[in-house]
Length: 341
Image 1: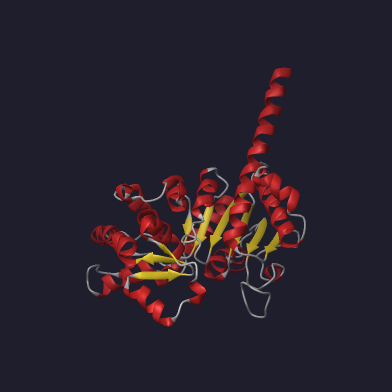
Image 2: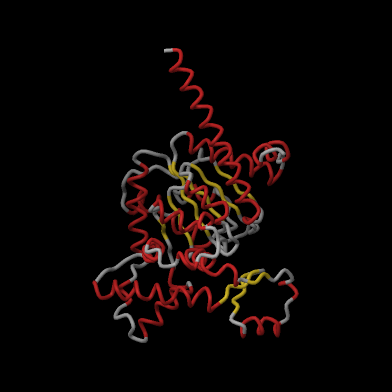
């Protein structure tokens, strides 16, 4: 059987398929030339189990930073500890309002075709994360949302509850690498809501325990400036919304607001099923970003108009195979050079 990269090279020749291949090859070229990559996660990618492919990309150093919604941040952990209690609803398009009510009464929160169990996922995490919030509160610490989840995972308190292979958790892979994560708008996530409830009830003395989106932007500016000193930084965007719009703005912030020199993003790829439209961020063409000082005229730019749950795993597998092939070729060349010396 042909490898995934061979299959794509042979069959993906036109339209969105050709763009997928072109974007993948450009990603490989970007990495092989010493570039760094940020991936942004909108939608429900964690519940769609993107970790099955993304975790390997992280562990193989093909990702250097992630920006994600609060939902994606927490839902990878929910899946890690409660996967066996999830329910898939293949006929979700046909559900009546009464059937949706029945799911709610069973404690199942539906995300398209998948239901997240309230008790075995969300409430299982709440007890452990509350202890970390309260400990930080007592110590006068202020941390970013993902730092609490990194602490939770690194404490190993959840290991006995893992219900998937930990190799398939992208957040666990990121924690192992201490990967920079940026999560704007965390407040509207489930854990964000839970945190607010504990501040209201007095279990936590102040909302200042959690640092805000502005803190994330300041951290992002620092990361971008430091990383850009040595490498071009690429931008791989899954979906749109705040997960994409927040981080890409760091370049014009540095250039226009701080009035400091700053390189543009060195690669751009967006997977989106949003139709091109007026006033829509997700539906804006990449060239519009040139006018905002985010990309430049010669930045490699790609838009793949398709479902990210199909496209991203294919691209990640292709990228890993091609980068591995490149590494083997360089190793053989180096060995040959040494043998001739």
